[in-house]
Image 1 (cartoon, rainbow, N blue to C red):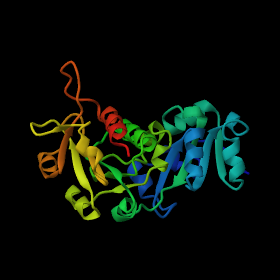
Image 2 (image 1 turned 90 degrees about the vertical axis):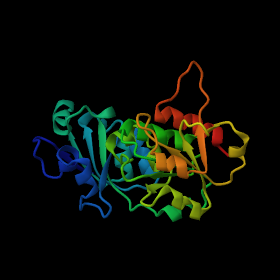
Image 3 (image 1 turned 180 degrees about the vertical axis):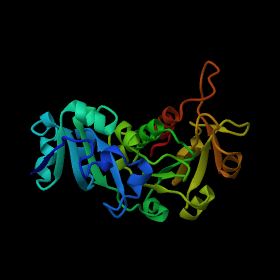
Image 4 (image 1 turned 60 degrees about the vertical axis):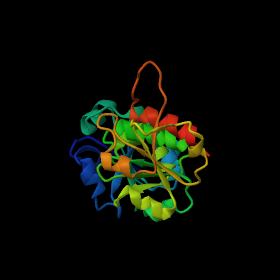
Amino acid sequence: MNIIEVTSLNEPGLDVYSSLTEAQLRQSKEAEGGVFIAESPKVIRVALDAGYQPLSLLCERRHIDGDASEIISRFPSLTVYTGDRQLLSQLTGYTLTRGVLCAMNRPLLPTVEEICKDAHRVVVIDAVCDTTNIGAIFRSAAALGIDAVLLTPDSCDPFNRRSVRVSMGSVFLVPWTWLDTPITSLAKQGFKTAAMALSDDSIPLNHPVLKTIDRLAVIMGTEGDGLPGEVISSSDYVVRIPMSHAVDSLNVAAAAAVTFWELRR
């Protein structure tokens, strides 16, 4: 077990936890596909069980024989940086959730064709930039039968530390990748598209026709601006969630959960 006691904020090897931005982590040369940070023992274990490879661990001293002990025992050669709670909070700039962080290899992402090959229910996340919403959408996707997640390039990175934590590790359980082509290109994969939006020609979420579609891609946008007009007009269906008391919209994460439940196969 390679345990390094952190006594200085400038300790070599700690830049992934302290000074690198999310963009710099993605471009880190420590791993072919970059690096991401998983936070809390539970989330780290979900990542490890899904096959993700750890690079190093940062934890409070008391967790070496506590919450982090199982993780350390699984990877005896893993470098473990440790120190007291106050010093590690100074290092990272925030209080560690359950006192444990893990730097992990960011895998090379599959292609859209690869993750959609056997999928029947896909969600397309269009320009959602809030890390909390991304994490919550992934958690609902994993729980409620979504086979794959596609994100437009202007959406938040699912491997952002906060997104990973909010998802409780669900980002490791549902295949995902970036959608660099127009959403209409999913028709080549045999998908019908359903844009979640309010419009005069929208159909309710519980409309029977939606249940008959074998391969369906649900498109979710931000609750502020919603989906772009061209996305709505080019979709096969425009779908709304029926609501009471003149409420016209839900937070995108809440809307996603309702939608995934209703359209599950």
